Amino acid sequence: MNTIWIVMPILIVLMFLLGIDLDRKAFAGVARKPKAVLLGMAGQIVVLPVIAFAVAWALGLPPIYFMGLVLVACCPGGSSSNVFSMLAKGDVALSVTLTALSSIITLFTLPVIMAFVTDFVSSTSGCDIHLPIGKLIMQNIVLLFVPLLAGSLFRKLRPEAAAKTAKVLGKLAFPALMTLASVFFLQYWREIADNFAILGLSGAMLIMLAMLCSSGLSRMGCFDAGTRRTIVIEVGMQNAAQAIAIASSPLIFNSGEMALPAIIYALLMNVILLVYVYVIRRRTATAA
Image (cartoon, rainbow, N blue to C red; front, top):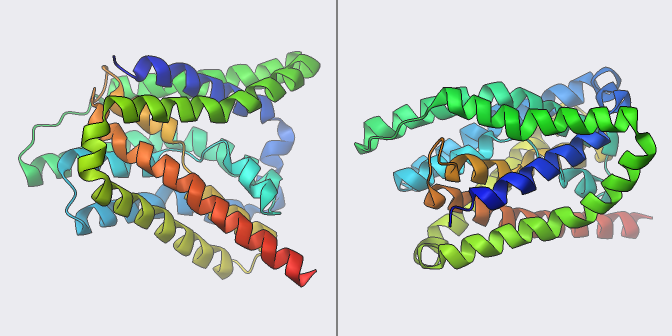
């Protein structure tokens, strides 16, 4: 069974839900905190793929996992980052702005970065890996931009119905992602068991280094604590469902194994950032 048929509806629902959350206020953060938006985007679009490439190269990951790790780093911020920002007492409006902007910007940056990585891996490993850029762009438009736009229009035309829909979809999003992870584990349990040490290490290194570098970026901007937490969470949480959709799509890479770094990353991402939120809340409670 090709898991793309499970990933696609989940990704569409997540992007439709994000579209419902978007309004003019969502992009007001650009004018309200332009430096924070700029640094947050730099962390996601530039720093994170560089970290992923460096980690994959330093650990000597096999070509298929090398590309899978960089792929998840090239994806936009995850929609759950908004919830994590709220739990960490961050700037939720800024979080929504960064998630929305990264979802649009990565439509253009992801194909460029992955084309470079595909050429690099092919030339250094001798593997003949081909990236159909046109199909990648079309799939991203259909799975990301179209549902994002549809959700935004739905909110504008039917605000009350959109609010009710968002509540229902918001409750279904996390169980759907866990179902997706379970399906992958059942289908690729042997590969995961054989490579969990290296996949877990590379995923954890990517997340921890991303959080460390984004914390440094936010401190350079001299932001308040809430803004710093938001940037750390946004850079640390990526849309793993999109990475899985691209890796497993028969139109693009058609590789379930390439999606494994994204699956492991998604699980570690939630655990590590939940610990981060817990520590932040304990510190806040102690200081109060």
